[in-house]
Image 1 (tube, rainbow, N blue to C red):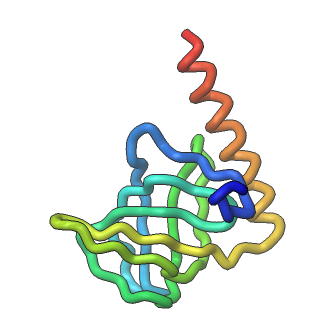
Image 2 (tube, rainbow, N blue to C red):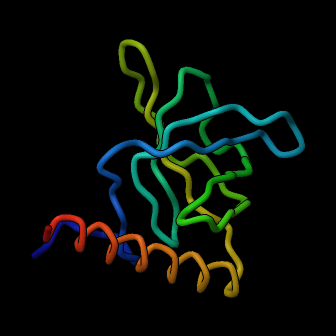
Length: 115
């Protein structure tokens, strides 16, 4: 039996991509995103956030910008930074658009690898 409990396919980036996160209504803090799915994302930051804190995530995939609310569901403290997991609170329309952009991104990455 697989250990993969994920409901959605996840795109892991070759290089961390830039994003921003804020505590709802607060200023945005820069983050580096490791991977994204329709259900959530994993990122690293020097900033500290609390577990179960409601956040807004801002990022761009292939020139398409997203602003998605979520909740911090995982926190792993390292030496110089902290890894976080966010579970998105996402509507169907945004989920469909994000799914499409992640598919396009993955296709482009595969094509680059073929050359």
